[in-house]
Amino acid sequence: MKRLLKRIALAISAAVVLAGAVAGVYAFARSRTFDASMDKVYPIAPLPLQRSADPAVIARGKHLADAIAGCTVSFCHEGDLGGGETFSVGPLATFTGPNVSPGGLGAAYADGELARLIRHGVKKDGRSVRLMPAQDFGWLSDADLVAIISFFRSVAPVDRPNGIVKVNTLGKIYDVNGDFAIDVARRIDHEKIDLAPPPSANADYGRYLSRVCTACHGEHLSGGPIPGGPPSFPVPLNLTPHETGLKSWTFEDFDELLTHGIRKNGMKLQEFMPIEAFGKMDRSEKTALFAYLRTLPPTPFGNR
Image (tube, rainbow, N blue to C red; front, top):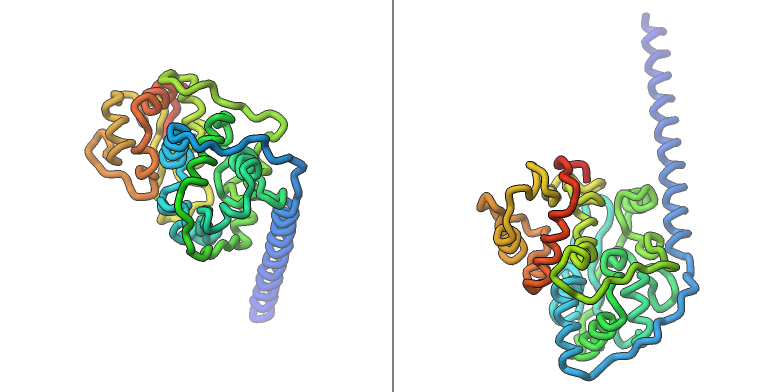
């Protein structure tokens, strides 16, 4: 019996060692794939766009940076564009939005290079930016890109060092497996950018606005736990017109959610929802987004 137990113990130990070795090889391969993807140089030329000094254009750019692209929220580049707060995505990664003011990286980018970064997620050196969700707002028109660039150029220089950016092995694995977007340029069809029509309060324009919601609420916008997110992450709501979603909501309910972070049942949203950005959408944008969400197929909660 002792010999049998010893053999069983040895067999279990060997299986554990083998499983660990397999897992190590898998993690190494996934990491190498991620690193190679991040090293890829995209042959995309800077866009032929230049800043404007028109106050109306700059004001439009500030609105877009505040409300649509979310550039000025605290966990991105902050209101002065001098760099955001450092935040941890559990065991996946640690990020800090860089200083993109004229006192930071903004000074290193020509206008056309900055426009390329926003639309294609491609940095000055031709490689992919990390985490910045260009795939969610690269649909902005040339005029809107000019507006954002003009706003960036109009802010005061900020002298603040860039914070930590670290992608852990698990983060690389989740990115390669398609569960968490860190390598941004790989997720964009650079040959066919779907640009939005002129802003309006209809569902067609709302379809573009909704793209900023998909990273958290899922491709089908039906919510559920974020794949790869730590247990501390809040669970995104169902935005479709299903019983578990927004079926009984009015525009006023939706406006209250975006503006003040208050749900229809009176509960306050957790801080992960970027109300500081979406609350700055104008009424036309909120109307367009709500109109589009009403056109979605009613999908049960959690089907993302």
